[in-house]
Picture 1 (cartoon, rainbow, N blue to C red):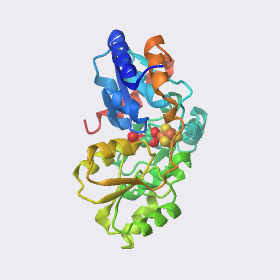
Picture 2 (picture 1 turned 60 degrees about the horizontal axis):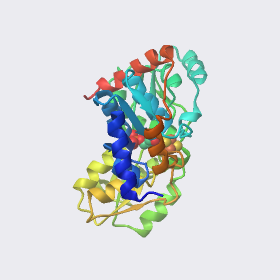
Picture 3 (picture 1 turned 120 degrees about the vertical axis):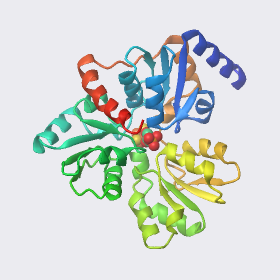
Length: 317
Ligand code: 13P
Ligand code: SF4
């Protein structure tokens, strides 16, 4: 068996040999985040996938992220170290569902969170992530009806921050973030009344967090609804003694590294995405060694899905 050091050297050697760049999402295991060339949120990783020089991208994340990378860099080889790494949120809607929903609202603009399959993206007009969802909505004329899919909590959040009342929201959810609910949040906030609060908009408690702030239970300036990348930027700047984090627990690794003087604690310590954790040290090594598993998107689907992703990338860049 290999030591951690030998593993790291072998991963770097194989990546050089394959001309591969390793991208890792903020929810990946700590050893994967540490060995990656870039670690980030889904928007940052999409931008990198579109711009990196390497001929191969090893995507340490879940299937829809590797597909998005392939859409943006069709000439590159995209590897996902574990092809079964899926997403319970992406599983809540099919391409057929989108077609049927659109048929009920033929004039609507269809906005898809990137946590969807390429086949679903192909049926939509523009994508968004948790860091640019409000900007994407604001890019759409105010009088247009909008169908937002698939996350109900992010949908409710963008409705609130944009003040638009003609957004219809698909009732999907991520099992990990839905489990960080209002009840759990209130308990933690009562036990830690002086802490700051960073909440991912996919959380079941995203509305409760803003309610706690609006009701004065927690001072407004201490409550922030942020993407994982937004959490990292806020963590670098804060001088709070403690911050409670409502998202998948893999995020804590980056936050603690970015700011060693603030204590970061999960709101729900069981909020772990088993799909994200399928990418193990061994899987990354075998992916680089054997070129597994290559992710492809059929060209007819890819052409339509790419338009939707590229419209998003064009906003704010
Ligand atoms: P972000 O990295 O865009 O905040 O996404 C969170 C997520 O759930 C990805 O699976
Ligand atoms: Fe999907 Fe939720 Fe896992 Fe993100 S945390 S990959 S949304 S199941």
